Image (cartoon, rainbow over all chains, first blue to last red; front, side, top):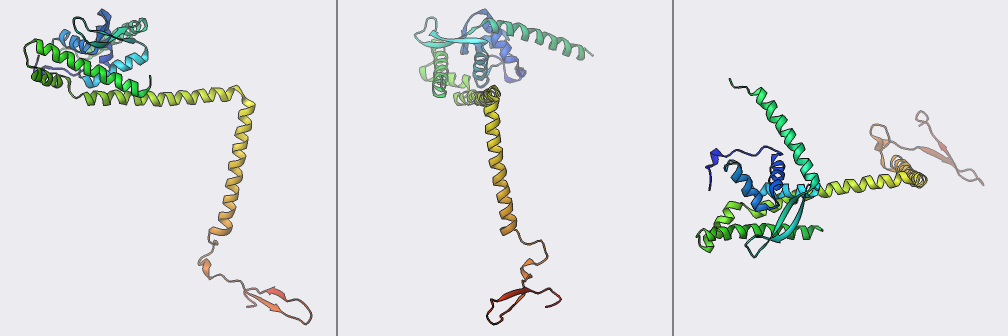
Length: 114
Length: 144
């Protein structure tokens, strides 16, 4: 599926939390949908490994930025664990977006086109 | 939630996702077995995912240990007289024990602070006069 490995970019340390929160802003999702959504919206450039997704989700839950609920998957006879953004998660997302914008701007200034 | 329940929930979550993925692949026309294999490949190792998540819980435990420590500190500050008494008793006990052990170590176990201490000797003479008890006299090196 998707791109060959050399067209993938590695996730920067600490950005996965932000991507997950952003994904949950649109709608509550289960873990698999979060991973797929990040892959799809990044045109398959970002591959979310499950080995880092679940620790991230549990970390976010512990911080109180998301809550969880077991619920039926639409059209399937199967229960999956849904993650929902909390109000404090929304605040955290805004803070991380701001920090991210600052970082991109700062790096952009240093890496001027030669 | 205790650790076992959390583990079970995580395993259940991973299993549900794996099956969901396999189902979707089956709907695309893969055989059940091929779908299962493809889902497993797409996922990477579920054991690794469990392990990484568990690692994070480990930090969790360390943090709760630190929280307990802080709580103990707050309680100790709240009743300073009791805390001082306990600290004093512990300090005295440790001090006395250390003193006794230090004394016994010097008196019985450490060799004397001279070269070749095993060659040191104690020399004395005893006299026995009639009707009197024996009396000892220590000789100096020169007298010997």
